[in-house]
Image: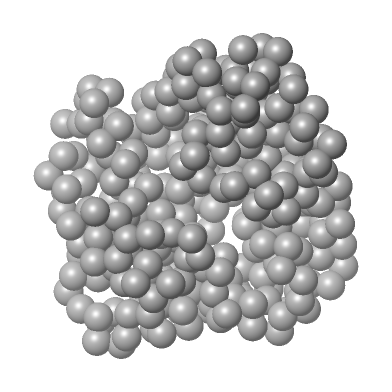
Length: 289
């Protein structure tokens, strides 16, 4: 049984360096751009917001801004609800699964996708999702209502998506309880040095230089950031509390799966994740040790 926080942290690291790549690769795939364009969503941001939120139905910008958390409301509003005048959530979901199918066949090949190892990974990942709880997790809960696909590689992707959104919703709760807004959460994440550069964060999330600088100034006054924009001791403690709370709230699926099966799932998924990174399919991500 995975029970203590040390084990929870280890599972969190495993998720971030193994399982998550299998989900996140779809956001950068040419197959996704082609499938969404065929559904009428040619703009990349609109395709992203619509495809990730489609499980919730034809929701507007307010719902997506709240549930995605760190995007500028104006950036979301340029895409939604306009996307739903072009296409439907059902068509977008169909395009999304088709894109994953196309992408996985290119990255992994037919022989690997038909292997016993992929089938086993899919079964274990699906079993892990049985330990997820929907309480307070809108993105997870929406995706959990979708029907399971039939093919093992799509089962694996859908299961990893559920696990990712389950953890992501818990992470937002942890950020909120520690007093962070979407923007200040993003600024402090950048300050850890483990993610975006400030310019990439502003560009992809839609925040202006003035808005970013105001958040930095606020966090500096609060003692979270130093004058040079790096985390203070207090800031590091804050981020550590957020991660610990996220890990604790995300432990359910791994407790359900158990230590042995969790280790086996990681063993099966590690070479798949490495292949994603070796192909350069996720920009800026390196192959973990």
